[in-house]
Amino acid sequence: MDQQLIDLILGNLDHYDYPGFRIKICRDAGELDFGGDLYGQFVPADAPTDRELDAYHHTLLHHTSEHENLAGLASVIYWGYATFGNNGTYGRNKVTWFMQARGNGPASAARCLQEARNAVAQAQYGEALGAVGQMSQLGQTPFASKVIAFLCPDHAGVYDNRIANGLVDHPVLRNQTRPGGLFEHCTGGVGRVASPTIRRKYQAWCVALGQIAEHVNGGGRQPRIRALDVERAIFSAIA
Image (cartoon, rainbow, N blue to C red):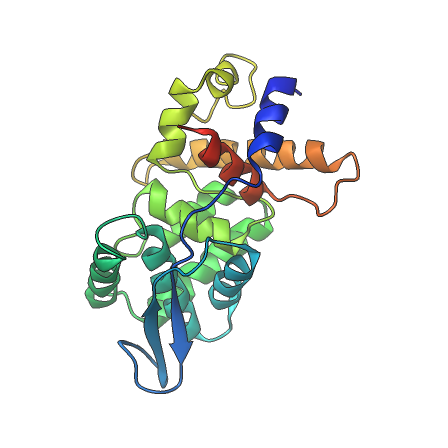
């Protein structure tokens, strides 16, 4: 595997500092009502995103309760808009629109996430992307991929505009998009997840992230890194 790429990853593993916004769930009345006597409070970041927050979202998205599933999706959306607007104001609005959208109830959340879980269990990350994209506000790669990244951090990562631009503009990454390169089939992956082409590009992206993680972990590295950690290192490396 290309040593420049590995050096880029290793040099940026500890540089990820995206704000750790989340929606805290509670059983008392809150700003959001997810049904089933489950409520939520917006919690602006007091620290960067870390594995504890990853585990929080992962648990909600895998929960057997449809209400926790809906809360998990809302929290990921809020997290994803952490850098937009004033202290998460835009993210709050996006969550409100998500919650009010026709058909975006607990049952739909549970159904779409179950389809996504079934897909990732078969290493079909592109199909998982399409499954969550059935819900309003999650029809584009940047946000659908955030859900899949938290759903399956060992094997998936985010694919947003920053990543898409970096694959074109960053010399080390761009070198890997050439024929035979690790990212050959990953460029141009931002778009509507209903598109088979977009889903294939996301599949290729997740496979590439997993291959890099496997290569780095092959030396007995502890703690082991995940595909999500590789993506975050790339995200951090892109100016």
